[in-house]
Image (cartoon, rainbow, N blue to C red; front, side, top):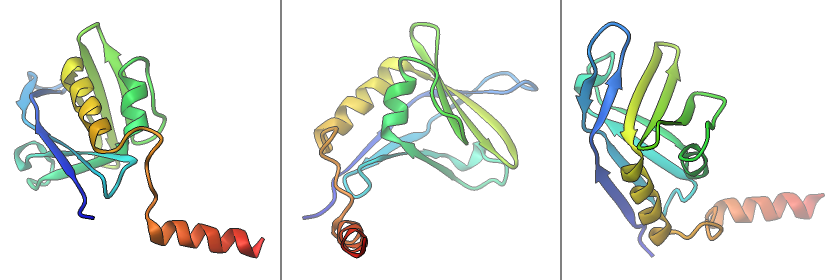
Length: 138
């Protein structure tokens, strides 16, 4: 069975302390091959090194962050008013704060459920076999 990939280009705003907000068009991506992950692909013109950047984080984190502040590591998501959601990306190079329309993120999340239902995620045969082998040894 071939993996199903969902892609959705969205409008967002890069928020910086030094410059006015910058309109960006990242692509949200979800694949049945990586059922626990959401990817956001950013165009080259918004990255520090001039190359496209992809961030990956848990689909469950996105779901949680649409309703309340979520995340403790490199990716943090929180509501920003009633109609917007902010995603913060932290790296050794600094902090990027991106503001999205909440309805857009929620629509993408719901569409990802059509690809793989929540709770029906599969780790894949290799990982399942490896975990079974570990449990057999215990």
